[in-house]
Image (cartoon, rainbow over all chains, first blue to last red):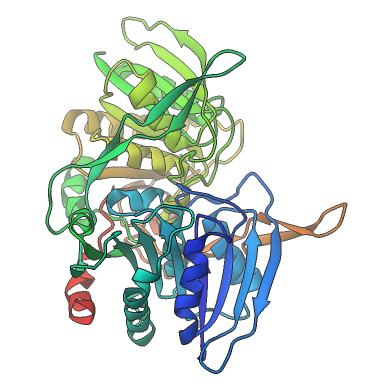
Length: 257
Length: 257
């Protein structure tokens, strides 16, 4: 009960995912939410360089003997702004754990790069706190994520007890299934998006576009999070902050230095 | 002269950086720009999930015997949107090279995560095209980047001739110095931001915040891009799409599977 857990997401503070997640983890300690005031899907690690950011207090609920306090703020910024704001302006102290999610929709494979949910975990990781991103295959706005409770609590408990290596956080994706096949430690799948823009006619002339399309993996890699997720497993991918392609450094030195 | 080079940035299509870069690389082939209609610093890999995107043709300049054509479009989306739009809707074919930049301001170290310039290179890399992000220590809006020409052309020539490994792109940062000490192949530096929010009073009440602060490296790591950049070297960091923390997978399996 002495732990402090910071939560944010990219679906907004009022989304089912983050509110259900808060209840799942209150048995481990106090839960403090700073989340966007509305949906911010696909925010990546963007920050609000060109617009000011405001915070609004939403509510506070006292804990019980077995469950921590719950405090919720909304913020006009990006998911990454929310994490930065929480650490510097709103949290009572450095938290013991940072969680992004539960995202309505998965963030498997290279899609983690575009994900605001993942950004929260990466930002927590940058700040030296063990961090996890949770995403679900359930996308509906009124989704019931209770089927994830046991797995979420298992992973949170492990991380609270053991921590994570410096510069490493977790990307956890849970498929929308009756019963999980199990849990798999995975690598990030590779793939790309196709037919990414849907064209529309503007009523006063000209075209505009909505980003859309479908994701296709490059290959069926059984070690990948995409494969695990598509086959009913909870996919846990350890993600690192350090993007250096070490294996290419020597060759690059020969070519450029 | 048969090459097609795609350029974008996060400072906007009218910025000095991208326009000077276009002229630096026209000797290698046709240059096609799709860049944001205004500044989008700190965009990371964000995409416009919640707003429609429009494109506007800016201008076309025919090439000469020794310099390729130059075509410029502006786009209301993020830097990553620009790359996606270019590939699917605007470029005449898949380009031979993708370049983000020249960014007004460096993108060393973990700051690559927040960078729209880097996002363009990562998106190009996702699409299987050799990709480079160029950033400069010069930040002024009217900066003269001609001091970078020789190094930019050397790196572009090398990449056009040799390609880059699948899933690897380059993050190139050039300090604002009279004379470079040389070129160093680096790893991504680690560090964090401090005093990230500047508080202001709104004239009609309440507080709002601007993101600001200063970046501090965790340690003086002589292999890092930050060190090279701060010591007058052109810092070239090979960056990979695959974020998997492979070194932690076995331990994680023992703890969770």
